[in-house]
Length: 117
Image (tube, rainbow, N blue to C red; front, side):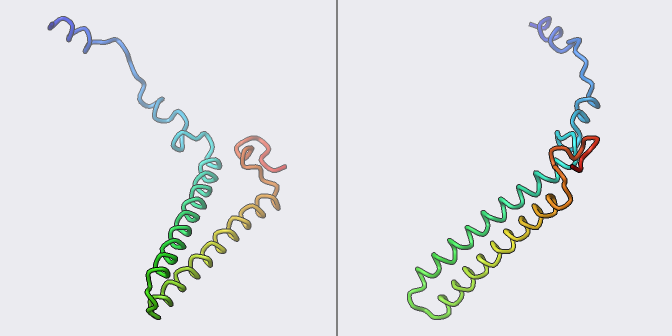
């Protein structure tokens, strides 16, 4: 039993930790443009989900208000704020896309020799 443990612990495998850690850079991405683009896309998705949750929360508050005027006003404000937030998210995404098209930047080619057009 002791011989098995010795041979297992004394394996001749050498792992170059530095090469593995810096293999793709930027959390596995080879280009920071792809990382930023994916973070922006994830941010838009998270914002959309949060907007949906606020809409549902406002709707549930509205349905369970029981005719109380202050609860109805608060739920209407929450729903209005969620819709305004959705408009802001949609417009920021549109501005992001317009900037990319206006400057002719292709995110997939941003780390190549010719990122524009």
